[in-house]
Length: 323
Ligand code: NAD
Ligand code: SER
Image 1 (cartoon, rainbow, N blue to C red):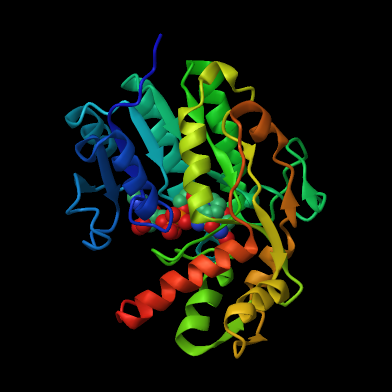
Image 2: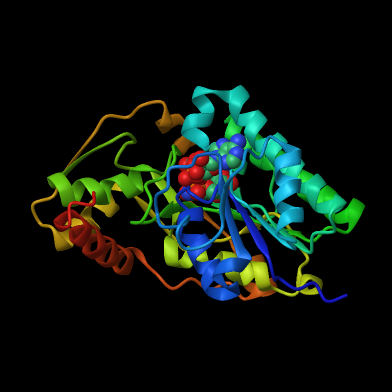
């Protein structure tokens, strides 16, 4: 059976990744064929003006199914979630949104014969016992509620692949760095905030210590990884919802030095908070050989090329009074 992507529903479309991935999906599949949705209705990012947009709470099965039927959706990109920082402040809400939302999306997909579902996971699936370079196959012992939901989400997705033959794909995004939409409350947010503050104030007070090292990825590579996996032939995939994807890995001191290359007067100090323990529980980098072998993953950006790009975009936005 040919499982084509023609009509896509995006949940959590106003978030850091959705606000850019929706634009990419509309460019690829046609503006009217990509329905953006989010719990919020803030009218920003042009997503409402540039194509169909609906408010949608992923905790409500009926709301999801109505959009699927109304638009004859065949593909769902499920991005709605609560991330690690927000999740640790409210673990029950994190469990409810992440697990019930995922379960609803999977059940609607089976009931409506959806062709393809994309549900991202995270580096948060690992815990302190993970090797510094996270292997594709290794025990998953997260110490955050967000990580717990991501592990359970991966296992749940694989269950739907086996039990119902549903085509579900997903990858473990590293911390995503971007200049379009500010992150929604994760631990890796410092790696985005540092650029905003460098441009606005030439100084950043970081909420994790200078030797904190995590896997990171620039948004253009995040979009590439997502589109590449979304379009990979199903029969070539041995993994489904848990692909490691790597790009770059650096500590905060190295990140600050990369910024200083372009802004020599930039300064940084450190006031670690509760997110230090979360960052310390995650690995430094990941082994993404399965993604490279099964669907040809190959990132384009390194720390220097990302830094140059981020600073240029944010300087322009700052001059225009947009940040
Ligand atoms: P985000 O926090 O920026 O956006 C999430 C969006 O979901 C928000 O716009 C929010 O309004 C919406 N939302 C929350 N509750 C909802 C509900 N009940 N119904 C509908 N919408 C709801 O998140 P993001 O960074 O864009 O992340 C997208 C996905 O990627 C998530 O699954 C996240 O776990 C994963 N991920 C992100 C990163 C990263 O660094 N950004 C890293 C790893 C994994
Ligand atoms: N960027 C995410 C977070 O910090 C990782 O999944 O929560």
